[in-house]
Structures are given as C-alpha cells and as structure tokens.
Length: 199
View 1 (cartoon, rainbow, N blue to C red):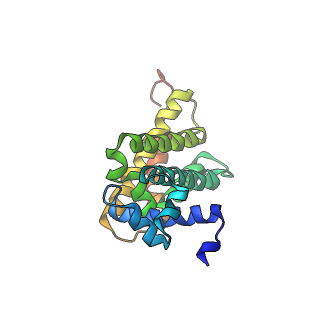
View 2 (view 1 turned 90 degrees about the vertical axis):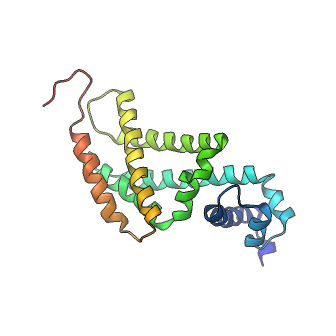
View 3 (view 1 turned 135 degrees about the vertical axis):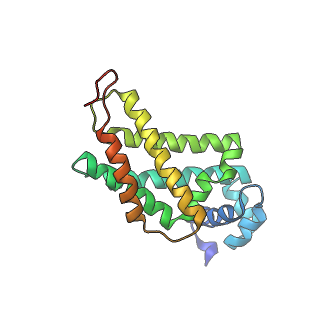
C-alpha cells in the first residue's frame, strides 16, 4: 500500500518519520538507513526525496518552524485586544510544545544549535516568530522597540518550555500559558516610549 503514495504524500510521511527518529537520537547519531527503515522504505526511495541527511534535516526544521508559526498566527488572528492576543498566542505555543515534543526538541535541541547552518535555520524561525508577534503588541512605541519586545517574548516562551520538556512530566499547556501570559502581559502594560517618564 505504501508504494502507491503520491510523491507529495510520500515526502510528508518521510518527514513525519524522520522527525521522530532525529528527535530521539539527534542529528549526528541518526543515519539515513535508520530513517528509511523506520519509514518502511528502501534507502534509494529516501534519496529520491532528499539528496542527503543534511537536506532532510533542513527540510524538517523548515517544516516544524512553519507549523509552529501557523498555530500562533491562526490562534491570535481574531483576538479582540492585546490581552487576548497575549493569552491566545502563548496558549497556541504551549499546546504545540505539549502535543509535539519531538518537533520542539528538533527545533531547540543541541543538534540544531551546534551546526552553523542549522543554527541559522532556527534563528530564521525565531525571527519569523518575533515578526509575527510584533504587530500584536499594542503599545505606543516604534517598530524596532516592538520587535525587540517580540524577541523577548519568544525567549520567555522558549525558556519556560525547555524546563517543562527537560523535566519530562506531563503539563497542562493552558495553565502554563496563563502563568507565562500573566507575566508577559504585566510587563507589556508597563511598556513606554523611549524617553517617556514612568507612570
């Protein structure tokens, strides 16, 4: 049955399987043979879709980053105010972490940080996330200030989720989103323009 998959469906299947394999063993400890075996295909079939392990891993980083960004943008699109945008954005992010540990570990694990090419790909995802968040910040500040705060929010979410994933315990993503969202919202309410006096 698997031999009748279209090229697009086969590529998607290979990416899903490779995500689990890479997240479990890391980039350097994983071979293309292992990915092919886990996917139930021959190695030549795998190479028809990805010319190298590096290309496969890069495609995974792009795919995982796009899925995370889509989840956040979709969740915040109809939010009526700044507080709702903050809460819904964090909720979408922590649900993504809770439901897809493998994707989180692939994106933020050490394998993606040690290699300069992969590190650039992760920075691109982080920048895209900040670019998506910046317009949601409702404050009377310039664009550069807004983008700096958006990067800070990305770092806040990543730091909290790293701790949760490393502990290995199940967690309630909505509760964590509320906790982190409360902190972020309290900080955002105090944001002021450069040179402005404290309230």
